[in-house]
Length: 226
Image 1 (cartoon, one colour):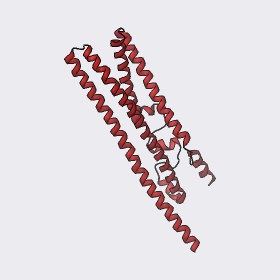
Image 2 (image 1 turned 30 degrees about the vertical axis):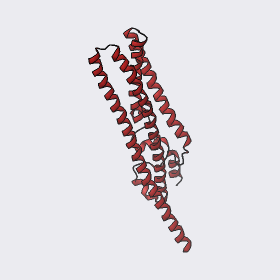
Image 3 (image 1 turned 90 degrees about the vertical axis):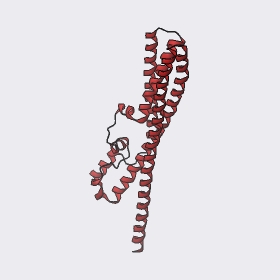
Image 4 (image 1 turned 30 degrees about the horizontal axis):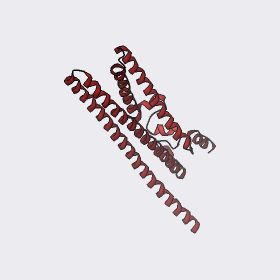
């Protein structure tokens, strides 16, 4: 009886640890979302203010050299803010990914302790990429990266980079207007591609470092063997 009581007490302790960790991870996930939203809002606000300022400068200066000098100072600042915002929002997304993976593992433990509870879980109990995406109700897709906070920031930052390249091509190198527009579009496309590749690379690196303990296929195999 003493051994059984010790096992029951040990099981109760483990369950308390798991539930506490589950709550802590949920709080941490909320923190990553709040930081990502704050960073993105700061960036969008700065871009909006910069565009309004450029409009005023354009009206006052009559689109002369003063306007282009102001643009050459403003756009590098916004682009720098865009790069650091993109990188930090991407970091918070990766943090959220790791937290979600650990939560799925804890939920898998719940199902191990009380198998009869598993059919009541809507969210998955496996820790592979499809399972983590299933927890937020989406399917794996390449274009899904553009729907993330970092993907949005990357596209807006690419627009800034393209416009800046067009301004430099027009006012600095004195290219024809259509050549400058084509240059801006090409730089924009290249920037979107690089942002997307960097985001995909970071998620792949984190996924490779995480060892999957309970992939979806193993769950099916365990059910069949049972």
